[in-house]
Length: 245
Image 1 (cartoon, one colour):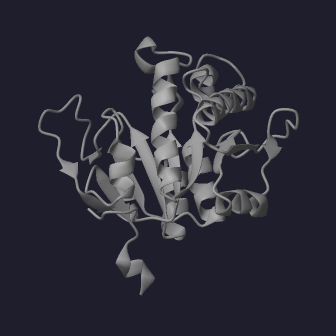
Image 2 (image 1 turned 180 degrees about the vertical axis):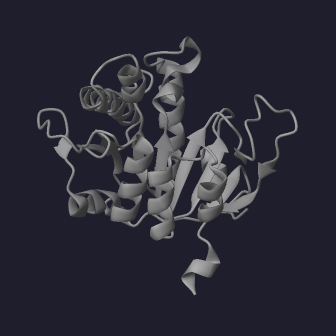
């Protein structure tokens, strides 16, 4: 672990369910305020922070589609859910005095800026926290894929995948007491083993662009800062060095 941050620019991926807290749905004020304080702490350290939030606490497109709704229609509704979460996080951050911008892949000029890559980078350079809403703007793509895409576009050094689980396991640790957690694994190994880190499209994007991913639990306060400062928490998903030579 280092005294200061190990990264200059990071993309934090959060699931929508994390904002629901113990209530299981919607947005729990105390929970989102805690995450806002942790993000503000990174910004105060000089780290450029971009955030992608899912919408599962409001509506999950794939789940709705499995119950008979048209998949594209359901996914667009899910994208709206991510914008609601983005605006809620923006409000929590700005109440702490943190400068932010919400940028959406689907135009909605009255509540957020349209996503423009160069403008997003400029906001980050000026020390603003940039929250990306609306996924990729296309149905059939997850917010994990949106996170990988935005990370590549803004040249983030790492994707921080904040979860309720303390890393990547060889099998579901909730079902298998003997599941083994990886400290380090490579993108290709994740794909070949079918591990549930991010969906395969997101992992492929990270692999092609050599973007490392740190999967860690945020159930204990302060873990985001500890990961950014280089503490060995969770699982690091790294580019395969063999692909680089």
